Image 1 (spheres, rainbow, N blue to C red):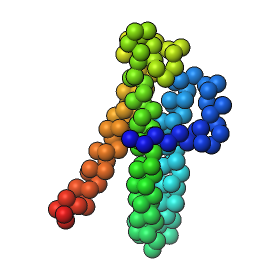
Image 2 (cartoon, helix red, strand yellow):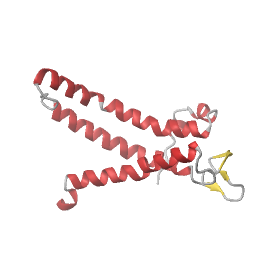
Image 3 (cartoon, rainbow, N blue to C red):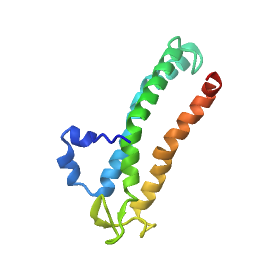
Image 4 (cartoon, helix red, strand yellow):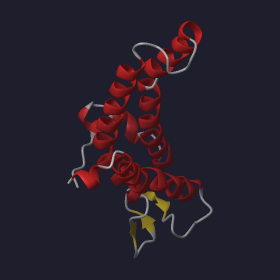
Length: 151
């Protein structure tokens, strides 16, 4: 698995080190969703204009073109963020067994030992969204378009 440290590459690592582990985790898991929301703005705008001026959500003349562009951009974005965000989320469950501390931040107790902690719950939810959810999403998209039957 390739791990691309975008924060370090952009020179933001010094800011990220002053944040606690949970804040960095939240930033890394919510930011990709914010990008997806921004990518959906042209599609939503086209749908609203279609509803207002053309009588239906999908009746705008450019709707299909914008929808195709959105799907292409979404798939590319998910493909690019999947390794980085998945590794970050899964690092939450990597602990030093002797000291019972989190390897990513030795100031924190291993989340496995505090299953009611915010960090543990946050990580479990985002393990389902990123490392499990993105491949499942790709699987369903491939089967929706009957790609396995084409091969």
